[in-house]
Length: 384
Image (cartoon, rainbow, N blue to C red; front, top):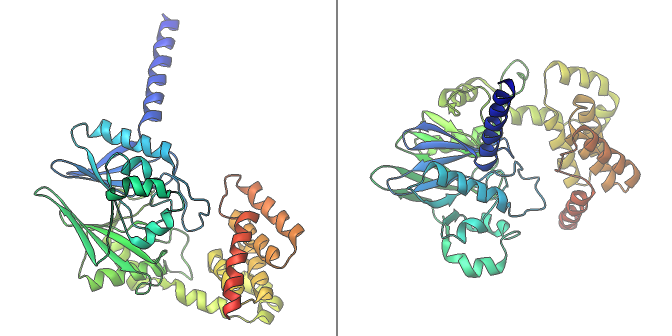
């Protein structure tokens, strides 16, 4: 009897595991509104259900942002996503795939969708970047299934639901990660899907207050200019705290009113002279640690200094952030990149290895990326 019970449990668990391998998890959020989650990333898609079809907002199969260098079509993940949608919505086809920007945590696959007649909605500038993995033959064959938001907005609606895709430009909202971007407003619920533009600070308080990021400032500016006050904001991240899977608007409202601006903290430290960074390093380090100043500020300082060929300052910032957050693979990668720019290949390789020791999956840097970055910086320096 015990053996039979064990066999039954084993088979049941196996079936359950196979089912999980076959489909992504889909959770209902509201009437005709769902989230689809991925085992391969910490991000999610939003599914909007209409009377006769569904729309997929974002396809974050690969959890990579602007640091992604080798773009490719993650077709297996796309097939799993489509299979998951067919299983959950057997009587409603996927009609549109819409994404906010070109980073893989927004869109990681194209061909499996457009080759099946599903319309991809993008922007011209974002699609230019996607051409790194969407070959010209595919575009020639299935290009009629690609639509661009070229103006201010695009609307998808029927009697049961509505999506307004708002397009805005980096030139107007400087913290936008790409040259243009799409927000998706869902008037039926008064929700705004803002993706990674809601870059909420999840760390400790900085100088005793919640840190107000530049993207949050831009998001608030957009809402004010559009006279929108959504009840909830949908981010790409899988929320760790909010049970709804969304951020209440009052969280943004609160940090806008009471937070300390990232730009103020950044200016305070990035404007320091090399002499002070070098001679008062320990006292600065105590101040930074006591006030929970994020290492990312000094990482910004590294690349700000590199852009103007201030190699000594870049190195000081890189060394400083390593002392603040030595458990972060990215800070070691930045230190390695500075040494690579300085021609110190042995040291650069050592710090690349250190970043991999901390996180073998770290893929945001290394020699291959540094070589490409150096080429771009040389073009920039030639113009100065």
